[in-house]
Length: 259
Image (tube, rainbow, N blue to C red):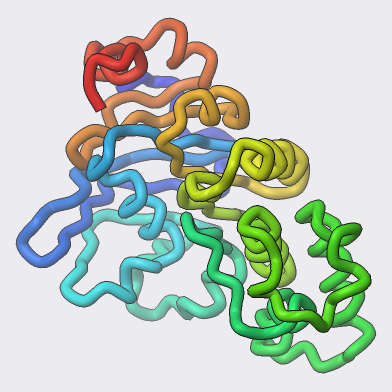
């Protein structure tokens, strides 16, 4: 692994010797990786290499899969979030997630974005409305939906649904946004909008994105981490990693020799 990923004063979250097991299968092997505030980090690697499993460790989404267990630490705000006393619901307010397939609720556009606010006890209608508008604007969707907020979210296009899910995640004002291949199911135009949105959002949020698309990683990320067979092979500034990788496995993957 390159030495460029040492912890710095602006690290917002980091893993230390993180291993993950699905039953007897070890999906991750002692991953130590830190993430800087207000940067985009791309996680790349072939299918099954562990990058999505790693991403789900960062807000305990793996808890929802039976038979999983973790070793090591994920440190956020000075605490190991893998600890038993951690309030997972509160954690996911701080570390939001957008999935590969858009998953709007079968509710109105407005209610989708307001959902997390209402669940977390915000009852002031004008404050909820203001936060919904702000989040839709941040997700570059407001102008397209402002006149049909009470219409079903499932009536939106695929790209709009994904931006709606981003707005829903932003509404509770997280510090970190996890994105698991957010554009893989979208057409090129919708993908471009998501990528432009990521570049805008990093002004306010730390973004960690899993992507199979190396061109996408090079376009949107500041740092790239390459995973292979459950191990972190190399991490560095994106331009350096793509032009002068240190590890042979990284070079072979980037040049298309495997994966």
